Image 1: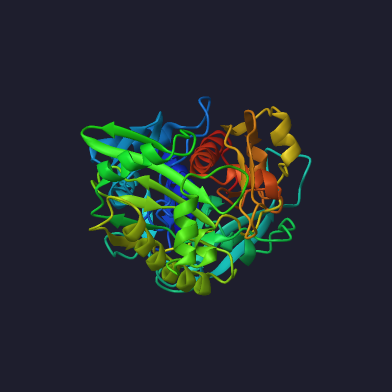
Image 2: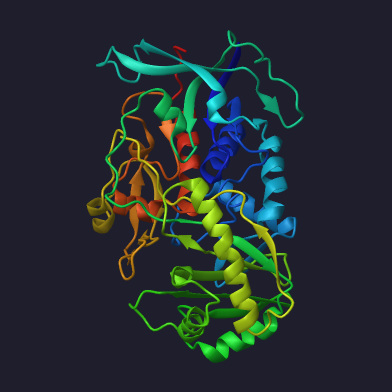
Length: 441
C-alpha cells in the first residue's frame, strides 16, 4: 500500500499547478499522467500563449514561478503586457524540474483505462458533523505505475492500492469521475468544435510583420513588437461578419482558387513563439464537421497542410516556411461538467458576484465557439470570481475537479476554461487541502 496526502489525475495546466503547490506545502503528492510528458494543452496541444485574464488574478504562485523558470530557460517573453508567451518545447522539461524540486512523484504513461479498481467508503467527516453518511474516495489500483526513472512505485499487482486523503480529477474529460458514478451537468445542445494546432518555422517574421502593419491598421487584431532583437506578432481572421477583417481578401481568393476549402477559413489566428526565431504558432484549424476526436485529428491534419500552403503562396515572408510540429493532442474546449457543491452560472459571472472563498478572479471574456458562421460568442465582461465550491464534487467529499470540467454552465465555462484560470483552480485546491486535513483517513 502506497499512502499519499493527494493523488492528482492529469498533468496538464491545472494538474501541474495543483501538484506543485501541494508539494511546496509539504503534502505527499502523486501526479498520474497518461502521456510521457507534462503540460497538457500547452505542450501536447500547442495552446500558446497563455491568455492574460486581468490584473487582479489570485492563486498565481505557480504561474509566477513558471514565468521565472521559463524565462531562465529561454522559453518566455512578455508581449503586449502579457507574460504568458511560452515555448511549448522548453515547457516540458521546465515543468518536470519544477515538480521534482518540490518532491512531487510523477507516474508517466499511465492512461486512466489502466486504473482497474477504485474503493469507495462512507465515513463521518469531522468538518461536517451534521452529516454521517459522507462518501469518500479512498484508493485506486493499477497493475503498474512508472515514474520518470521507470521505477515501479510498488504497485505491481492488482491487490495493491494507492491510498490518499484527497483525490483531484484534472483529466479534462473527468475520467475518474465517470468511473465512480459522479453526477454530471447536462451539456449544451451543440458541442464546441475542436481545434488542431501546429507550428511553422523558417518564416521571415520581420517581412511578415512589416506587411501586416501595412495591411491591417486594427491594433485590436494585429500587433507587432520587436523584443530582444526578434520580431513578435499576432493577427487573426474568421469567416464571421461581425467585424472587418483585413485578411479577408486573401482568404476569399484562396477559396476561389481552390487552395483552401471554405471551411478551412472559419478560424485563423497566429502567434509568434518565445525562443523560436522564425516560428509561428497557429490557433487553427477549427474542425466543424465532426465531434469524433480521431476523425477530427485526421481532418485537421489535412487542413493544416492546406493552410500552410496558403500562407506560403499568399503571405510575404513565408517563401521558405515549413511545418515544424503538429500538435500531438486535439484541442478540446469543452467536454462535460461535474455537478459540484456549487454550480456557477453565467448570471454569477455577469453580475460579478462575490464569494467567501474565491478560487479564481478573472475578466477573460465569455468565449464559446460554434461551427456555424456568425454564431460564436465573444462577450466582454467585467471582473468575476469563481468559488472553491465549484471545484468540489457534490458526490464525494474528498474529490476535486479542476480544469475545463468544473461545475459551471455552458457560457460560464466558456470564460473559465482558459489556462490562466486553470492554473488558479489547481493552486486554490492545493491551498484548500492544506487548510482542511482529513485526520480520520
